[in-house]
Length: 82
Image (tube, rainbow, N blue to C red; front, side):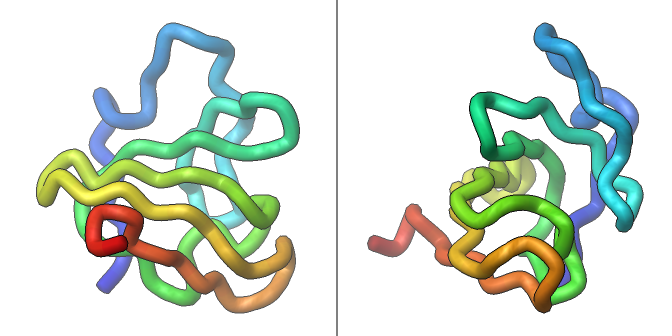
């Protein structure tokens, strides 16, 4: 599966950073990224995001945290199953 992001999901009330290497918009809070989209994240999604970044799948009401370091294949933990 991969993250799909609509134009409205890429907008926010905070300052939106440039897109990730994969084209996802995000808001930076401290040292982590906060992203919103639809679908479960895959290993190629937001590879450049720092460890601890957060992703909300608003299509399926799921919440994920990135457990891998920036620059490597992404590993995401589904916090709604914990």
